[in-house]
Image (tube, rainbow, N blue to C red; front, side, top):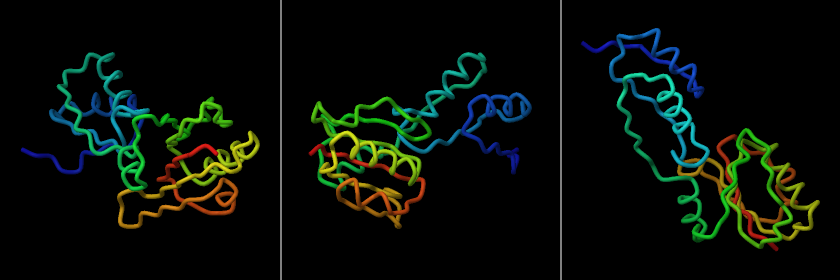
Length: 168
């Protein structure tokens, strides 16, 4: 029979595995992560923890369309030469002077991280870079805004956020 109401809401693999150990009656768990399973992926971390514990689950990862691919298509940019960076919950050690002239796709976790990015671009001589900022990509409330770093210093965004940076 099917049990209703057995859920664990967390993105921490160790918490998920501890929950599964406490619920041996769950024979076919489903773990859902948003985002690309290959780009700073929670799914990859979960799989590594699962292997380390030797738990008896067979896993299958079903990818969706990545934010990088979707965003590139929305703004008419190819992502084959873009450098992908995550500032989602991390500071990152990126050279925001963009000396290499490569475009950047940046995952962000909200307004403050976007402001940090824009301040760094301005400080390092990229005040004329062009940013595309995408909020809630693929959702009905999707918002796309383009401009120089300065315009984003006073705008507010949610946490589902990415930026495409085009060097000056």
